[in-house]
Structures are given as structure tokens and as C-alpha cells.
Image 1 (cartoon, helix red, strand yellow):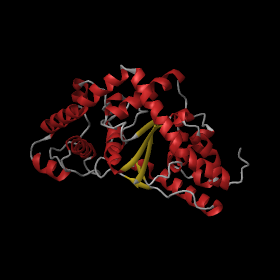
Image 2: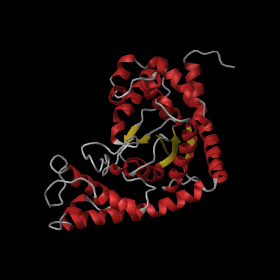
Image 3: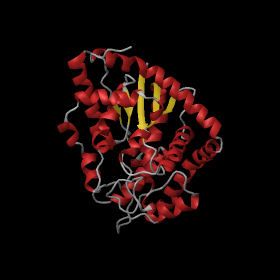
Image 4: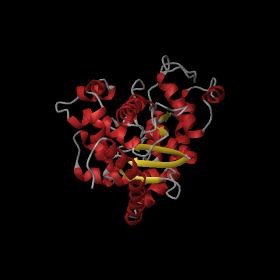
Length: 328
């Protein structure tokens, strides 16, 4: 049985891009084997944050994972900081990770350029991500397109550890969405939709009311033409809306292009908005139920943490033994 692992940060309200590249994939891949989905709260402290907000957003994200279709009877959902093996594995793996590799990480370069204070955690967090994945002897990692470089680093770290200390780790493979891998900002379709963006008009939140979803999509930036055609370089805005419509309905982009041939942008945008509203409504209902029952939510997370500790313990023990630690 394949072992599956993926993690998502509890920072910012989750949007359509998170659904397309993350939640949707998680639901699909849990059918392929034994799945572990982690709320990676330790990753969230690498930049300025509010402690009280972190607590709430951690529970928000856990509820959203279940609401989008993760089955707690089939998959393990847990919070990273509840399983100490993650922090321990990150420190051990840092011994086989080079400074040069970390300094070449594109996301570190992009994020550090915009900050006066750059934490060491921001620089080293790809090692923690590698530990997250490798602890579970992971075969498949459902992730967004922007995480390819970090997964390759995790594979390199695993191979170097195996070469130096003996075979322990499997080399995981990424699973990327075929459609909607990169959902772009509605107002600036050259940029990826982002939780950290202060402009809420550029992102459709999963918890947005229907009227807000309709307004945001109808005001999405497009070109001056009228043909609904997929051409990301030439027609970034319309191409992004086609990606969104395809994800929301499951209909391939070529079929959408044929259906809206000659229809103009107005009707197309209205239909995109309705498709997103229909997709998100049952998710929002389930999410609201779970957030209104903190006892049940915490019970599910406690059970998930127990299962994650049990699954990760053998690998961590092997790491200590192979590296020469005198263990009790």
C-alpha cells in the first residue's frame, strides 16, 4: 500500500488556489493508499505572526481539511507540533543538508527580499519539510507546482542520508494537479493567488459568501478582447478563469472553450462565479459545523496525532541509531 503525505500551513484564509492545488488533491490521493495530512504549524513561525491567531488558524485549517472531504476513518489528519518527531528529524537531517542547497531555494530568495528581518527558520524550513515527508516513508506527495524545488531537495537529502548512514528513506514522488496547478490572482493574473496578499479582491476565499464570490469573479481583470480562449501568455485573466471553471466543474478546458465560443466575457464570468459558489457551499456548511464543535475537532486531531506518532517513531529511531547516538 502506498504511503501518502502532504502538509499545509495554517496561515491566512484559504482560497481557491489552496483548494485546487491542495485540498482537492488530498481527497483524490487518499484513495491511493495510507494517507497522512499535516497542519504544519511549525512552518508558520518563520515569519512575523500572532500567537492567538496561530491557535485559531490551526483549528480553522483542520476543520477545512475535513470539510473538503478528508475522511478521518481512512486518512490521518494531525498538527505538526503535536508530534515531536518532526522537529527532531529536521535537526538530524540538517547534518546532511548543505548551505549551498538552501541558499538556492527560490522561495527563500523571494520572501527574504521583502523583509527587514529574515529568520534562520525561513532559511532552514525546507529541511523541516524534508523531515515531515521522510519520517513517514512516503511514496507520494500531493503538492502544488510551486513546491517542486522543495520536494527535489527532500529527495536529495534522503539520498545523501542513505548514502552516508545506510538505507532508511524511500525517495518520494510528487503528485501534481493536471488542471489548476497554479491559480492566479484575479486582479493581477500574472501573479499566483496568495494567502498573504493584502488585496482580498484578487482571491476567492472558500468561506466567502456567494455574493462576494460573484462580485470578485465578475470584476476579475481580463483583456480587451471577447473570445474565451486558453492562452496564458496572451490572455492571462481569461485563461485563469478557464482554469477555475475547469476545477470547479471537472469539465476539460477545450470543452469549455467550445461551449463559450463567441459568447463574450460577461456570461462566461457569471457562469464561473456560479460554479464556484456551487462547489464551495457544501464545504462551508461542513466547515461551520466542525468549527462549532471544538470537542469533536480536538478529538479527531488527538487521534490523528497518536497515529502519526506511531507511524513516525520507527523511522526516527532508525535515524538516531544509524547516526551513532547512544539511545536509552
